[in-house]
Image 1 (cartoon, rainbow, N blue to C red):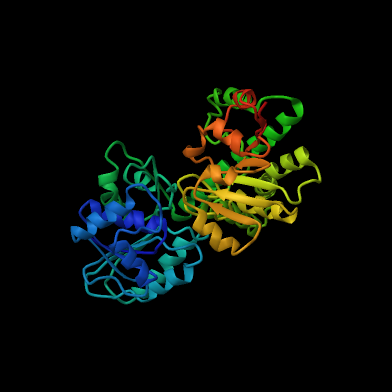
Image 2: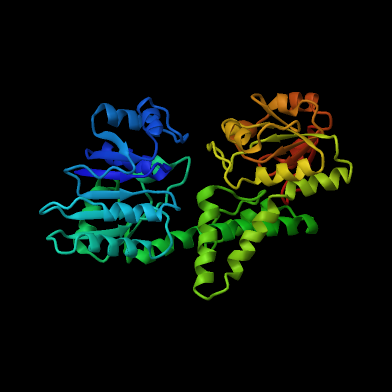
Length: 431
């Protein structure tokens, strides 16, 4: 089958490569020629395991090619796969308005973009308007992006579930056929109406964010009650009505997609005339939680922070990512700088993004080695739980630090072991 995928999001790249790997001929439309050239050279802008190799493999097999975002679909294509950025809804409608119309050429538009609820129905209207007075049949369906960065390729090729929103039986059958190679273990496609699928995607992330913020509130309360939140977490997770997913407290969540989806859901509720009280509180708790390590540092040193040196391990919004969108590290850095603290940072992948965000600063030093960042530090903050930080050389770490104070923003270290090793340990609700 011939498909045209529009977008240069992670979802677009994963979808194009995966669909090409199952034998389809795919044209990926991206916004910049430079990006297409980088992809041809095997340089993927996302550090997604297996994605760069798969893209190159599909190009070599001549099943994947590139075109500009403004270029129309190929002469044989009848499927448009939209995986555009959330602010590109107007671009999506322009693509509908410019579709080439040829005899007996029906159009299926698969919308994976995270647009507002109801957008797929609006795209259907644009599509029908384009096909008016022709013998072309057309349908727009919603197939929300449920991919998780770091396991996105695996999440497409072995999906736990898909949300398919359509009321057209022929469109449903065609999407099922496209997903059939990735849907063999069991039928993972859940059928619903387009706006139900769009809303479900937002509701999922709203629920996950709520669980995280709830656990962060419980962890802060545990600090006051002299309770170890990790034992509480395990006890809660053992209850089958709750389960253990997303019950790990920490220093807040970030990420472009996750944060944006929660805010979009809150905005949808507000525009409907309802007050998004729960989601507003979830977002408020999360923003407050991003400063929890700073508050612990303040409690340790009081007002005597100016001129101190603090090391920070991890600035990416999540491990495996190169991005810092809405990351807790950003708010934490601003709080530290406001108090005259010099911050030395290590991160396996996100330092270029941090350098671009912060610019040249005398109070920010980037390091390729985590122990160099900790050299002479009055405290070390672990902000992103990269695996490389889980088992540090404690003897070396203690030797290079000025004061062995550890602030564990992800609860990855054992408090008693760290204290026995000569460190002052401060976790999130840990004892």
